[in-house]
Length: 87
Image 1: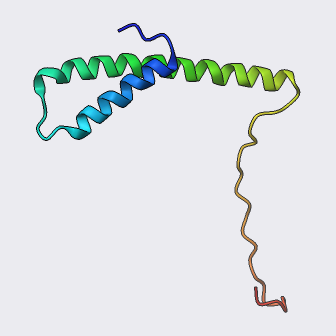
Image 2: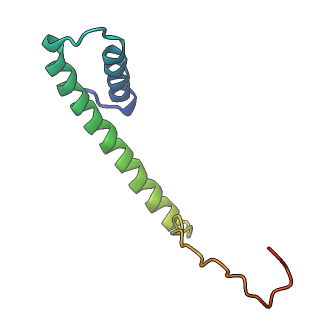
């Protein structure tokens, strides 16, 4: 398998997923091929996604834009008996 682009590799994953979904009975003879090609295609997709994420992170940090801020939980406000507001 020689997928070099994300689009080609993603197409392989979509075709194999559709094939597996539409099977009434598992075709064991083709299963190894489907799994092998899918794993290879997944690796291509993952590599491309990782490369794009790294490039975006570098571009944004070079532009002075920080990445996503971590989400922190804020403590819940406890109602005290001295509050006149019921909510």
